[in-house]
Each structure stands twice: as C-alpha cells, then as structure tokens.
Image (cartoon, rainbow, N blue to C red; front, side, top):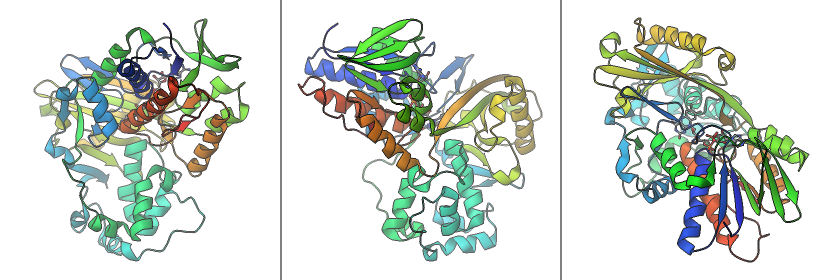
Length: 469
Ligand SMILES: Cc1cc2nc3c(=O)[nH]c(=O)nc-3n(C[C@H](O)[C@H](O)[C@H](O)COP(=O)(O)OP(=O)(O)OC[C@H]3O[C@@H](n4cnc5c(N)ncnc54)[C@H](O)[C@@H]3O)c2cc1C
C-alpha cells in the first residue's frame, strides 16, 4: 500500500464512518491511501450491536435514529442501504411516563399539555406561564434541571425533563449543562425569550418530516456494511495502548505486540479510552480527557408471549420518573416500534436500567440485573410470567455526560490537540451523544482530513465538528 498513512483508532460507528469516508474520498479522487482502522473488540460497531436470535432482532445499544441528519442519510445511500430502512410504526409517537405507579401519556405538543394526567393542575398553570419566566442567571452554566424548573416549573421539570434526560443520555438533569446537552433549548430562549413562543413561531422545515428509523434487521445492518466496506483495512482485536510522536509522524502501539506508523492518527474512541493513549504524549490533554464523565447502562431485553402481557403495548414505551424510586430509566416496546422485531405472538421489551440515577446497577451480575428489571416490569406493567427469552448487555461507559463546564472542557481539549499536528479526536464525547452525532462527527472529520491529505501542506489543521487539529 502507498499514499498517506492514516490510522483510525476505534471501530464504533464514528471510527467505521471516518474510515469508509476516507476510503471513498481516495477512490473518488483516484489517490492512494494507506488506511488502518484499529478496534479493540472482537467485532466492529461499538455500542451499535444487534443480535438476531430465533426470529428476534435485539438491539444491545441504539435501536434507531431520526431521519433528519444529512450525513447519516448520505452514508446509508453510499452503502446502498436506503431500501433497507424501516420506519417506526405511527403508534411510536405515543410515549408514556410512570407517575404514581401508573402509565400516563406524555403530551406530544403544547395542546396536549392542558389535558395530560402526567401533571397536576398547579403544574399546568405554572407551565402556561412559561413566557413570563425569569431570565437566565448571568455568567452561569445552568444545569438542564435548573433551566427547566426556571422556565416551566419544578414539577414539569421533574416529570417531563428529568425523565427525558434519563431516557436520552442515562444522565442526571441536575448535573448536565443545558448549553452543552440541549443547545436548541438554550437558543430558543435566547432568540425568542420563551420556549412556548419559539415552538409556536417555529417554521416547519420544508420536505418530509423527520421519522424514527432503523434497518430491517436492526442497526447491525449498517455497522456490518461499514465493516465489509473497510475489509482488510479493519483490524479488530487490536486495542491501542499508546500513541507517540516520531521524527516522521506518529507511532501507534497496539496489543498484541503491533506497531503502526502513520502520518495522521484519528482517535474515534470515547475520551475516557483516548486518555491513557496520550498519557506520555501530553499529560495535560490526558487529564482533560479524563474529566469527561460517562454513565453506565444495563440493557435487559425480555420476550414474552403476547398473552402474558396484561396491557396493550400501543406506543414507544415509557420513562420512569425519579420519584418512582425505580432502577429502570425506561422501557422500549421494541416489537410495537419496528416491524419484524419478534416472531408472531411474541412481545419484545427492552429495559434500560441503571444510568447516573442508579450507578450501582452496572456492577451487579447479569442475573441480578435481569431479576431487577423483571421485578420492576411486574410493578409497572403487571407482567408476572417468566420471559420466554432474555438477553442482558452491560455498558459501563455507555454515554458521555456533558456536565456543567463541558463546553469549556471541550474548548480546552481542542486547544491542547491543536499543539499536535496530525492528531485528531472525534466521536460522541464532545459535541452530541446520539448515533446521528457519531456519524456526523466521523464524516466531517474524515472529509476535512481528505481535503488536505493529498495536498502538500500536511501540517495545516484539520477543521471539522468535534475536537480536531
Ligand atoms: C444502550 C445504548 C442505547 C443507545 N440508544 C441510542 C438510540 O436509540 N439512538 C441514538 O441516536 N443513540 C443511542 N445511543 C448512543 C449511540 O449508541 C452512540 O452515539 C454511538 O453508538 C457512539 O458510537 P462511537 O463510535 O462514537 O462510540 P462507541 O460505540 O463507544 O465505539 C468506540 C469503539 O472504540 C473501541 N475502542 C475503545 N478503546 C479502544 C482502544 N484502546 N483501541 C481500539 N479500539 C478501542 C471500542 O471497542 C468501540 O468499538 C445509545 C447508546 C447506548 C449505550
């Protein structure tokens, strides 16, 4: 192989996407490229893993994404996978929260707020007063909870926002920065002075509405296609332990006993995993990367004959509010969400358990976590039967937590990385935690890098979303 040498570290969605984008750019421009994607695990995909078992399609990580990110749609198109996309059933718009042990339908817009049983009358009146809420405190990186309580009142903040934060990021709304985690909310307040006013005045984007989508055989369809496209460029079972500067570029040291020389190194791993790789290169950078926290998350997928589920699974599923005292953050009714997730007559539910609310759960044995998930399912849905099948997955560093001060930490990391030409970081530790963010981050970084890989100036900084230099 010849051409510029690029090593991408991490074979999750971000790293696979970055690798494929670079390969495609080289092919399209007719340039040589020596690309290696190093993944520590036995397979590729990172958190995006799908198990297909006896007619069940079980997601260990993400189960879908919104069809509004052009980078994701373009990637899928380039892999010839557009025809394999499936949309969530229309019922998926119905989401519930557990309040006082019972399921309450969450309002899907301002109109539904008036009638929802999820909020007391007092909370509804307070919520309607949102346009008159106090202004944000000056010079404070407000938490998501404080922002929500200030704007819509403490009860709605707890019931609607805190529960949603647990569902989206397994996080604690009292610790996350609203500017970093929900920049759109922050901008709505800044630009319109009120969230309600912003919602009413927002113009609908032209074109089809964003939908929740996945693939006919789950998210693994995409990661398998990305891995196949990389072919011999992907080396799994190759965990990187350190990266060092050499006179001619970079040296990447990986287990078991591998060394890769490179002109460019892209760290597409969580910040927590990148930190030990740069301990000797730049201890301050390593320390800054370690400051980004993660929430652990257990995922327990349970299958039951439909007759054993006392309630119609007519929606997306439910979120558990903090006051319920459950370890369960939420339950996704997978077999109601996408077609083909379970054989006829079977229901498939996925319990998301632990998170920042209950960090003890992730350290428990799988059988104990499954038993806890089943007990809490019985409490909420009344399921007493034993499941016909069960799968348990544990993700100790599931989702990055953009706690207060995240934007400053991210900027500091970017400055530190800028001191090392040829080194770049991307992924969901910095600028958005969703699957779409992972794809966007990998593609933007790779596109920016490709724009200058074959030019003469190899020291100019790579500019892209994420943290790059
Ligand atoms: C349970 C769960 C459910 C989720 N649900 C959704 C959802 O429904 N929708 C959504 O939009 N998002 C969801 N997400 C978030 C989504 O999964 C992530 O945004 C995305 O998968 C992140 O991909 P990534 O490649 O950045 O990171 P990762 O998936 O963490 O991949 C990083 C890769 O780097 C590898 N690695 C680590 N250290 C090294 C090393 N030293 N050397 C080499 N390789 C290394 C890892 O093995 C891993 O494969 C969910 C996440 C979890 C955990």
